[in-house]
Length: 367
Image 1 (cartoon, rainbow, N blue to C red):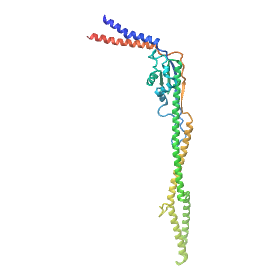
Image 2 (image 1 turned 45 degrees about the vertical axis):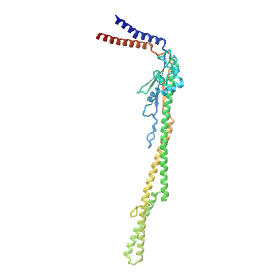
Image 3 (image 1 turned 90 degrees about the vertical axis):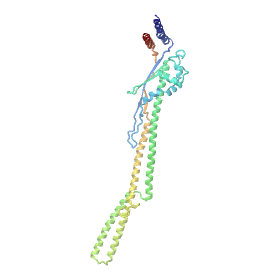
Image 4 (image 1 turned 180 degrees about the vertical axis):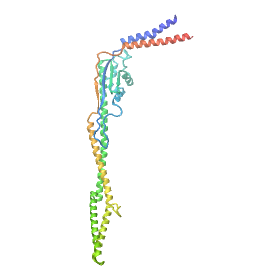
């Protein structure tokens, strides 16, 4: 019947012909592809400073983003593709079979860098194990040595990237401590300058020592005043009021009292003790300046220690690319998987023909 002829013709066109053409192409035109595998991970040493300081702990380890994820993204980037193309001529390596001979699997050397990037993602596979941090690289090319060269170039560029990240991290840490050290030095200079200006203005090296001397003098004056008062009382009780010794003793008492009042004023005690030159005010100013200087010295010492630690740790390599599987050199071609590809083409062609045939027969039966 005509419908049987149409079904047979459609089967030949949609199933047999694609199957035969794919078989002919895969076994006669498709070039062999060789694979090179490599495995590596990023090792990072947390070399934070163990010396506590006012700046906190200095950490030259990784940042917030894991280095393996940065490397995973870098290997798939257009920047890496352009770098390796300049050194190895990827266009020439991946177009060896010829775009006219094998247009399906070979790269067209006239393609743009974006096309080369897309083709790179077909030929270079990178997998990342988030639990262990291991990266597995698999590179395909039409010659075993070409695949190995590309894999070696990827590992070399990855090593450069990790070294650059490590260098930048160490430089940032050292520059930060340098800035903090400069601030600490300026703070210490200002504190010492303020203390020197205070001493020049007051002509007193250490007011606390002078206060001790003034307090000792005041005690002696009180002792002398007590003796003079006792002597005056004795004279008043044993002599006449016109006795010149009484007036002399009274003058002695008044002089001692005036001296005590003056010394108290200097110490900031009693009336008039709030003047700017009172020893209590000077001592308060001096102690404030001394505290500022001591804090500046401690801050400078801590910052200097942190800076020295940062410089020492910067000379260490805090992160590096650890290659546990060197790029391999293949002996047999692994791709294209001809039998698998031919089976898939034939199977999908048959399924497509079956679906279309069922649709056609269902439409015919509804008429």
